[in-house]
View (cartoon, rainbow, N blue to C red):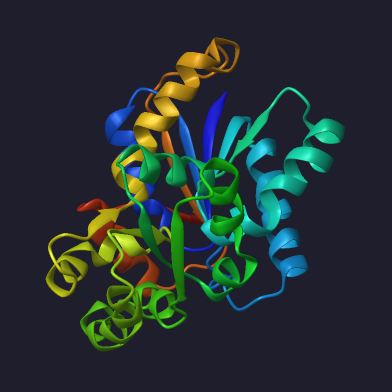
Length: 265
């Protein structure tokens, strides 16, 4: 059986690259819902329905474990899928999200005044603040919605990101944050820009840097899941819409040609 990785678009390929580099022997299926990207401006119900269809597809492709790399889908759909969908349809399989592991990483690094950039839905959901309150109510988090970034990144527009990014970051810098959570799988692509804009004392908390180790730890703690996974180093990359700009972006992220396969959910 395989590991599935789902994202609303192609940003999750950054995390997929990091995971496959760290754990190369497993079989993986990546699914990017490029037909409906971005998820950030959409309603919670729409995001749930999109995510449920994606999860259905990946489980039908023989995935034992699915990582919802999309922060927006994690905020909107993860708990409902885990509590309502899995017990009825696939009780022996698992779906993991990214919000809690990200906060665990931020706290383990000793940060006390966190910043967060994310989609409008993630920020308005308060999911990071809610989960952080459970872990350590003394830690502050200041969130900023950054709705222009994903469309620019998805459409090969990194050259145009700098100006809006500076505007988005200013209020967080003014709040004297000591760590910035990149609350979207697309945002690791902005790390070079972010390092130039942010004061040097602000750490970047980027999911591609630590989630591979989190996954490895999860598999070590759950040998019953790990034992079901096949190890042929077979990687499949699926999208729900295939445009020339998506192929360009996928190749750029992986640094080599990536075969994208268009699928219908």
